[in-house]
Amino acid sequence: MKIGIVCYPTFGGSGVVATELGLELSKRGHEIHFITYNQPVRLELISNNVHYHEVTVPEYPLFHYQPYELALSSKLVDMVKLHDIEILHVHYAIPHAYAAYMAKKMLQEEGINVPIVTTLHGTDITLVGSHPFYKSAVTFSINKSDAVTTVSQSLKDDTLRLFDIKNDIHVVSNFIDLEKYNHKFTDCQRGMMANDDEKIITHISNLRPVKRVQDVISIFYNIQKEIPAKLMFIGEGPEKEKIELRCQELGILDKVVFFGRSNEIDKILCFSDLFLLPSQTESFGLAALEAMASGVPVISSNSGGLPEVNIHGESGFLSNVGDVEDMTKNAMYILSDEERLKAFKKSARKVAEKFDLHAIVPQYEAIYEDTLAKC
Ligand code: GMT
Image 1 (cartoon, rainbow, N blue to C red):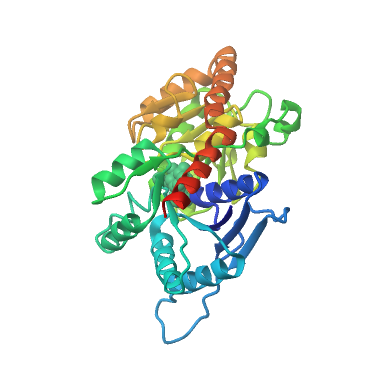
Image 2 (spheres, rainbow, N blue to C red; image 1 turned 60 degrees about the horizontal axis):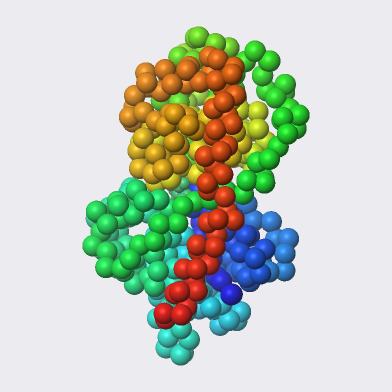
């Protein structure tokens, strides 16, 4: 198939999933066209089956807001015609599903039919999409999609609860390329980051309020009072400065490492002992899955889709949002006994294996085939 993929090209989970999906589909023989405003961060153009088409929005002083949706829908029309793209798969409803629908209508005028598959990723439903300013347009574009998927059962439930949805929603979990995380311990260069007796605790996110990074610091503060430990922060975002200040106030700045945005997440996870994800809401928690695939147990909140990924007592533990005490207790339970830590590492990896991309990518292929046959 010739598939057009629209996504945010950033470090966010939806862009990562869209990119990994496109790359895997290309390995399976499909021709993939990424259409977005920057080259996706995890996209390496190493195959002649993968193409990237940039959407450019010229600055015009008359416009207070530059019309990205318009530029995107125009680009979609042009690329579909130029490359005979058969199906468009848009990741994140806002504004991608809306722009794709406009493109579809324009193409219909020329007798070209291109079905749209929309994958909802989380905040396009829970935080942003359900805002009254966007709700009507989001409802409309979901209902006008030819197929709709969510990355967890929890997100499907939220979508049905928050919007008046007329079409079926397929749950297709996020997935992981397990081979990428098959490192040998000797590759990890743990010694560069910590002493042998120190435990390494990691958090990866875009450091937004929804990630509750202050809870990450509180949990780590409690842990390092009991055992030698270091905290690794990967990501950039609006909470960064507050995090630094709080670490300084608590006198733990020398135990905290800030990596910023990194494309070497697998290398950092390789030497991690525990992953913290105490989010307020999380449709899936791809970062937790990446940690588990690296054999890193997860201490997370039990919000949204996290219980579908982090299995309580197997890959780590779940606690109520904001229950720092319980999260600390669970973290200490795992970290305080070497044999137990080893067992949790092994079982975290085992749980991650259920999300193997080889099992999940064919589910998207089946949806494309059904959608093309139907439309
Ligand atoms: O978590 C973020 O802020 C980024 C966001 C995105 O849209 O890129 O992530 C969402 O999609 C990921 C991939 O499907 C999920 O793993 C994340 O759980 C989800 N984030 C939230 O629901 C907050």
